[in-house]
Length: 288
Image (tube, rainbow, N blue to C red; front, side):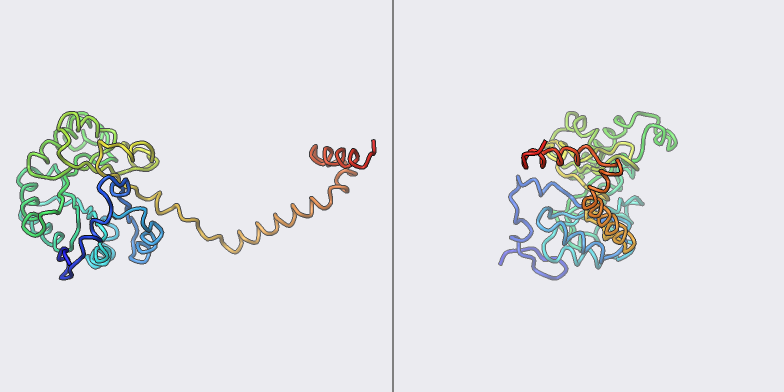
């Protein structure tokens, strides 16, 4: 059996590359933005075959540690480790080496860390797993021009994204992370020989430059789109006992109202629908 050695286990390549390259599901990343392994497993089970790549971010990784990544990687899932490393080059390189040993497929580093840090991350990843994609984070989707000015970057968001994207690609990163709003501009300026991950595919609430789910999920200018909190809220919640009792009582009252339509008619509270039904019944019986 041909495969890849991950966590000292040989994973069959057929499990890792089971989908055709043009399968739209290959481009969807489901964010596991939860605080426990139990909650993460529920999302993975609910998604099933609809996606094969999952994002493990700071919240889940801090709560569960590297073990949750090992568990998710073992069946052949692709894991996007979104920890946004940003430190001195030696520290980032060491962290990337450990992440590569976990078998993740993608990880993130802040492009604003500079070319030395970016090259150190790319070099460390190549030594352990040449297929690991190092993505440079440009400008967080929660930031706008005012936020950039506070950090000392006195330029428009698009200009900063283009500047950091060029720095990341020139330093050897295999892709970048940026808002879907800037993707077309990045492609026009820097070409198509690298991946782009668009986070914040959701109704724009906590992200100034987020985009709602829609046509951009099929946009070929992007390589991957990360769908977050809304996806895990799609599962219907269980109703409380009090809520169930209220619904049952409301349903019973509606049934009682239907059965007592004659009494409501006599009291002058009948609806137009009751009157139409009464007229049709009289016509069918030959009445006036």
